[in-house]
Length: 236
Ligand code: HEC
Ligand code: HEC
Image (cartoon, rainbow, N blue to C red; front, side, top):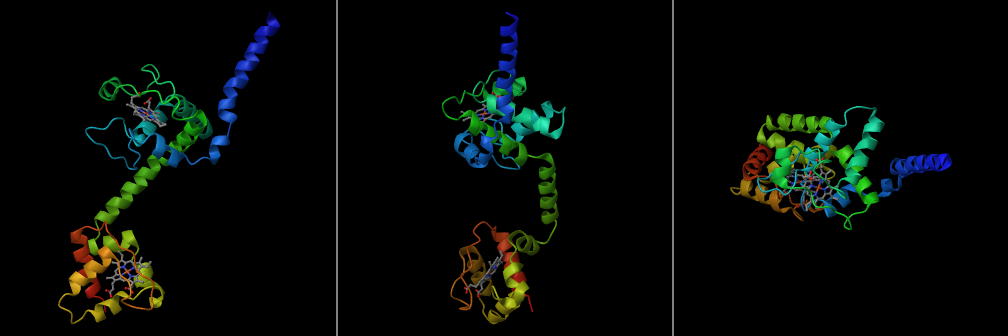
């Protein structure tokens, strides 16, 4: 009888331990898996995007409040606890286990079990990715960088964000025409601004022969395109 009890204890201990010691998930791409298996309900952006009709809290929010709930312990212990919880919850969700506050739970409803759709090992990879990606310190840095950028003149924001100068100012014109050369070329062209905006928005090729084509920068807003075009034409 005594022996059986000890056996059971040892068995339980090893059964619990395999969770933390099985590192096979580390070779999986947690970010890709999250996109494939979780993004239909959870927003994965960092910083998070929230919408009125979202089906689930964004992964940033989920990660942040689970991290807060398991504050005690060393870094490694907290990481393991986080991975243990996040790799278990999607398979066996319950109101008791959820760290979601009651109001949010009511709003979203309980997460449906993902059993059969994702494996435990995949969940560990996703959990590990979440732990590293959705980080408060990183968020602070991103927000600080954003507010620094927002204070710059519009043309400077474009130059910084898209690193235009790497090709157009540095390196003595080896990778792309210098901004002052572009300004010179368009000096007497009444449509210079429109042509420059078009080149940035839709890409440019074959105009300078020496160089490879430039890709299109489709996501720069109109106001910033105007500002950067004006700035380019002023370069001497
Ligand atoms: C069908 C929609 C849906 C899918 C798919 C889904 N979730 Fe959820 N998830 C929810 C909802 C709703 C909640 C909030 C309610 C709750 O906590 O159960 C939630 C909450 C969670 C929580 C937080 C529990 C807590 O304590 O706050 C974790 C962790 C989580 N999901 C992980 C995942 C992972 C990992 C995946 C991908 C494998 C995934 N979810 C896929 C709907 C979904
Ligand atoms: C990877 C290098 C690279 C980067 C980064 C780059 N460009 Fe270019 N750009 C080029 C090259 C090369 C050309 C010349 C293409 C050609 O021959 O038509 C070009 C062409 C242009 C032209 C058109 C010149 C003309 O004669 O009409 C403009 C304007 C321009 N770039 C602006 C920008 C701006 C603004 C940015 C940042 C948002 C930028 N470029 C980022 C390489 C780059």
